[in-house]
Image 1 (cartoon, one colour):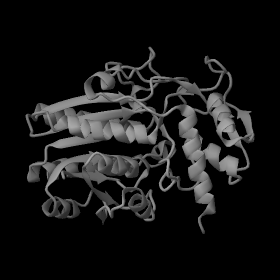
Image 2 (cartoon, helix red, strand yellow):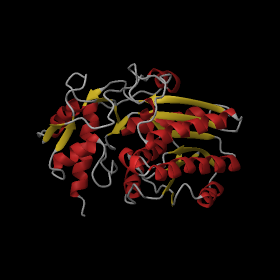
Image 3 (tube, rainbow, N blue to C red):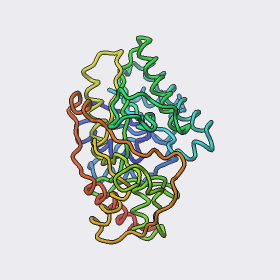
Image 4 (cartoon, helix red, strand yellow):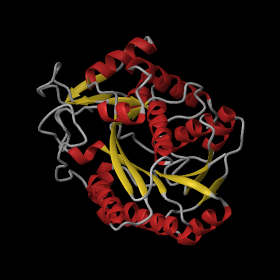
Length: 340
């Protein structure tokens, strides 16, 4: 059973990827500092997979911790999620984001090189495209100047991977540029756990639906879209998790040095108001929302061209928007039943 290290493996996408790895016959090893996740996620993983997944608590900037993990496990590859990700906070604290997101990748790459581990899947983002000139977005679409320090760290980290591969280093890497992850594991044992007020749409929708938030504000209804609200490509987190498993398996057949990148989305855009309508349908209740002014920095519309990942990794999404919102809602209801 090949072992795969998941940095940030107790986080939203990392935890679901751990499940997908187990289901595909891999043994995940988690490292997480729990700055943006909860330790009870590990119990949820145990309920779903039937096994205790090894977990190291610590920071990926801690090279001694990384060396301990690499020396204790013969790793077949690494999936790197660990990064700060709040766009708004990154504009207020850029040095925090540059220091963590970039230096943790450098520490990881140097440790991989030291221990002869070649395969890396990097968590990137569609934010590198900005507001694209043409839709849908292809991997060949030019990257725009980043709208935030967070987005810029993703661009810089991609460039670091490209330069390391060009140096003929023993590295085989894939960057997955994903769009808007939503949903939760269908068991409702794990899901998204935003700290404080959610910055993403769907957790705010479900928290409003359950009464934690008074109302949801839709930022603008005068965009050049079917109903005036922003368009995004919303992908179920389990489909996204499966893309990481496909990517790590694909790398096992490649010789280093190697680098490629793939969009991960559904290939379909949905407006904010369409998301609200789909939520109201699956939850069978109206949502309290209002229309507000546009939010500075919001991209009008973006969705993925998924042809490349379908052709080369044999990946395609299985969940619909309604499936995603139903799982998000069930997860929110499960959270509401847990003791505080």
